[in-house]
Amino acid sequence: MSVSSHFAGPESRWRSYLPEIVLLLITVIWGTTFLVVQHALTVTGPFFFVGVRFAAAALLLAVTSMRAMAGITWFDLRAGSAIGVALMLGYSLQTVGLQTIPSSQSAFITALYVPFVPLLQLLFMRRAPKFAAWVGIVLSFMGLMLLAGPEGATIRFETGELWTLASAVAIAGEIILIGLFAGRAHARRVTVVQLAVASLLSFAAMIPMGESVPPFSWLLVATAVGLGAASAAIQFAMNWAQRTVSATRATLIYAGEPVWAGIFGRMAGERLGPVAILGAVLIVAGVLVSELKWKKR
Image (cartoon, rainbow, N blue to C red; front, side, top):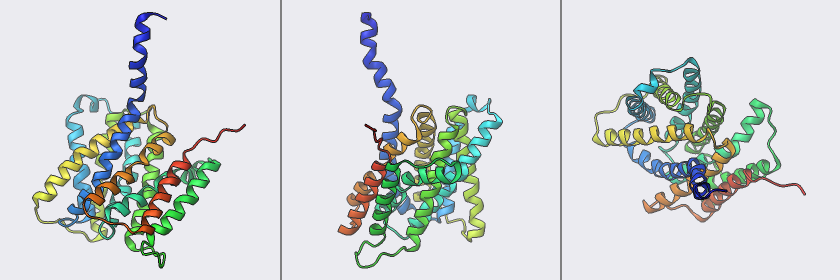
């Protein structure tokens, strides 16, 4: 081994971990968004907010990717549209749920997308979950039961919990689709398309949901632009990083998202009861266990 190759080793190892480091930073950003969205919902409806948020994200990324967008292909459009549908459902349903439940509770229920990934793969791809995935599903389900009944007396599912649970299914579908198309579609192009599709579908959903355009608010503008920039960075980073990071490993890293949301929620004054905290711990445990690799002797 030459001297130059010896010194190049640590740098190459660092670069190999860079996609995972990026995904880890994404979870921190995600953790803050739950609380920010909840404050924004005091001046706007959920579907308009998601539409404006993703419109800002699509515009910001498109402006900085003009040269790349010139070579867009039909495959980029198909991949981005499919991911965009799941993206819109995931964020819109989650935002609807945030109208009635605390941000920290929303984050832990949303984390159920991790055990939902193998379930969706079983239903639509005929890929049977491994033993660890089943254990994680059971733990997560038990945690959901406790989190849905934070007082410890009765287990109840309010409207907010049900909307958030549905959003977790949609987000699981988004992760599967990103893993399916990553590496075959151009990361920047597909991200712009999925953000634009999610924005248009969110605006369209306002009509059947009876949601009107809210009055002008600087809080809405600042939040939409700020979260739009964050969404553009997050969605592009996911498409870029998951070219080399498997969907399974990515979901394991994403498990840190509700923990950060719980920390930020507590700093803002939210308090989960002991039973709800136990439920949150079981959900995170289920997420982690579902991604373990069991070795046969």
